[in-house]
Amino acid sequence: MYTCSASRGKKPSITTCDTSPKRTLPPIKSASDKYFLESLGEYIQHEMERLMCPDEGPDEQRYIIYSSAFDKVIEYATAYKTILTSIKKEYDEFICAIKKSECDAKLAHGKLKAMVAQPTSLMYCQRRAVQLQERIAIIQRDTAELQAELNRLQESRRDKRPSLRQKASDSKTLRPVGQIPGLTFDESMNPAALAKHLEYLERKRADLQIKRKSQYVSVSVKDDLDNKMRSALDQRDELAVENERLQLRYKKMKFLNDSLMTWEKTGKEVTLLDDMIFILVSDTDFLGISAVVFEEDDPSKVNESELLVDYIERFIDLFEGGEYEAAAFHAAKSPHGVLRNMETMERFKAVTVYQGQGELPPLLLFFQALMISVHAGKQLPGETLSVEGVRCAMQLNYVELVTHWVTQKRLTYSEALGDVICEHGDRKPRMADTCLALAHIVYKACGVLRKAALSMCKRGMTMCVYCSLCVCLCAGDCLFVLKGCPSLALLQALTQEYQGQPAVLSLGFACHALLNSDLEDLALQMVEKTHSSGQGTLEKVILDDTGCSAENWGEIAGCCGQKNKPLLAKEILSILLSQSGAMRLSPGMESSRLMQHVFM
Image (tube, rainbow, N blue to C red; front, side, top):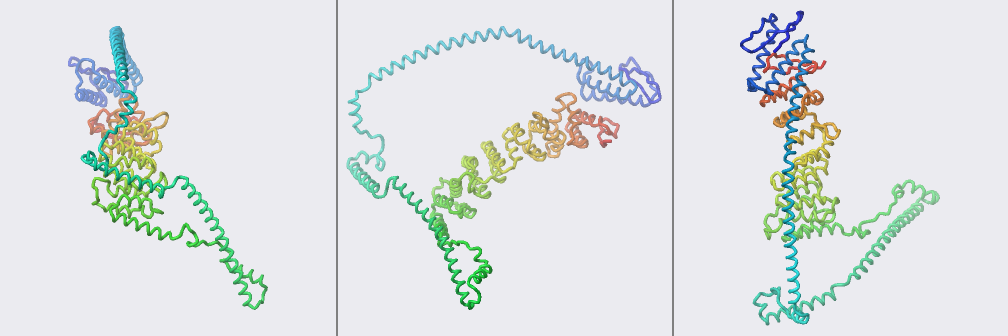
């Protein structure tokens, strides 16, 4: 190997250096050249021992070590840097051409093997086609035989059918098909019991016919009653308008009467017209005359408070009587929502002992009635009531009820509601996908987009998250999603361009944030994947990264060294040191680190 010596103020000289025992180095007068040569030899020896490179034969790692050493020589020899760089470039291009030709040769060899195997594959395909045609012929023959047998059976069955007369006589014979309702099996075989039961059924039929004539009417009667009710309501509205007009007239007449009496008492000193004008100006109440409709004058508000009291007392009677289902529907349909509140929910929640323990609990009956009585998007229960209802249904494993409530918009969506659904999915892995889908609907509806994106990521829909939600999220929200569902695919989607759109996060910013969240393995995997994606890719990413400082990249390099990735750490540090204004304040190879980065 050749080494170039170019000290300041001296003419460069070429010195040969060979590690074989038969040849010795000529004396080197410059101390700096001698120190550089020794450090270069130690670097080569140390790297070969650490990478366990073989002493002889072609080896990729040994080639990389000597290439790096040659780069150091080029950097050191300033006078011959141009010619040495050209030499190294020619050697690198020649080696790349050799590697490319080797790859092309392997590819051509594979294509040749495939072409050689084509006749054999064609022969096997033709043989398989013949076998399949034989099987098709067998299946068609069997199908024809089965069809002929089926036709023969149908004809024989048609010949064996009884005559229509015999069929009619058989139909008149009553054959019991099962146990008679209301009778035991022994009573069904007893003629006396059957006769007694027949009398009972005839009496019941007669009662039903009487009720039909006396208690039921046709639909036309209902339509007539509806028309009469509508006409009565119209008449009520007209009378209400007339009532307002008469009240206004009464107030005017009363005002006129009072004015006349006041004018007479004043001794008629002024004219009646002037006195009325004076009273009109001074009486501000009359200027705002309005037809006041009192509660007893409005039929729609008559005894409304009394009706509410009766409604609540009816609910209490049903609840204390143990009719929890009826009480639940009664509360759900309460006027003005007086019973659709947390107090009523606490009443049902306090019930722990009830008849029919296999039935639905009273609390779930209340929520079920509440959701049935509301309309989609109108008069929805409050946030707290919605959360408690979903929690109750989830605790009893009625996920289908929650699915219906969420999809039919019977709940008030909130972040707490989505959290309750997600927690149930975490406890029940079998229902996790359903719960995450429901939580996504809730989060997206109430505007909590980062949790909506997290729920989609947990379902494995990474690209859907990036396309639909990540463009609306800030950097902090994207980190929240990444920490909640650490994934290399998600990290790659967030730190790379997609369809011409810039990356949501910079690689350095995301990896540095993951280092502080005990997710350094994921960060190092991403950095390593970027480094292995192509020569110069990592350098371009670091130099173009405006969201991460050089100090943070230095911390990433330090973490690479701690995780037994020295080559990756060295690559990052070398890229950082190549920038303008970078300084390394320690000459040792192992202890070298980036101390400061100053942009001039």
